[in-house]
Image (cartoon, rainbow, N blue to C red; front, side, top):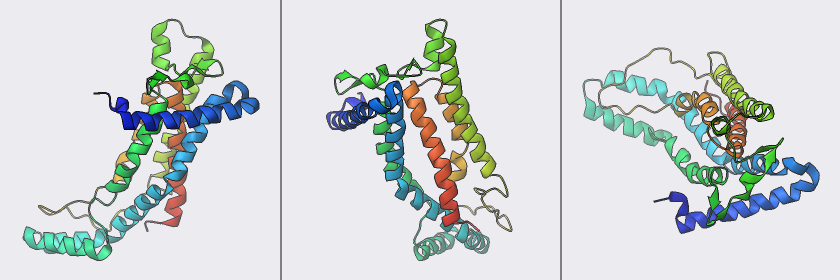
Length: 257
């Protein structure tokens, strides 16, 4: 079953599509042929801004995990031979701190449907039974519905096509590089190391470090951008750039150490 063909979801996507095309029409007198591409970027920024509260929740959760890490290690050391007692003490600690081992997962799940619906606008050739005319629009002469891999597979690509796609992929990779650089020890996104490392005791739930695990995805995103339509690539670039800036701002507001 096509998830996006499910009537309620198709209707929501169609509504978002109508707003997006309306924005493109509004911008056309100002930006000409770049109006559709600009609308993709603007809609992505609006969606990311609406999800700022999710980013704040993740930042607070990361701050909490870092703050209670020494207490977790002490409990794991103290009750390493008593898993049942350890579980009780861990539950009490999480309750006292108002968190849980999976506190960072819920915000990620909350934003997933919104991000999925918006992303669908940039990849679906048909929206709720009618053609997705956004993908027929162009950026510097390159259709928003074309992908780098698809263009190469279709024949000899034009130099301008390769230049536009290469610029997009390089830009996404550059954001990934900056994100990883900022996450290095001493960088603004670095995760403080505990004074002493203690292996988790048997049965002790480890608090997942989602932010660290997601960092390499920026480079994976650059690879994905080669296969998806140009409109989706613009969405990906805007998203990773926003994410980097947001993380830098929130880390200053909710420092880890």
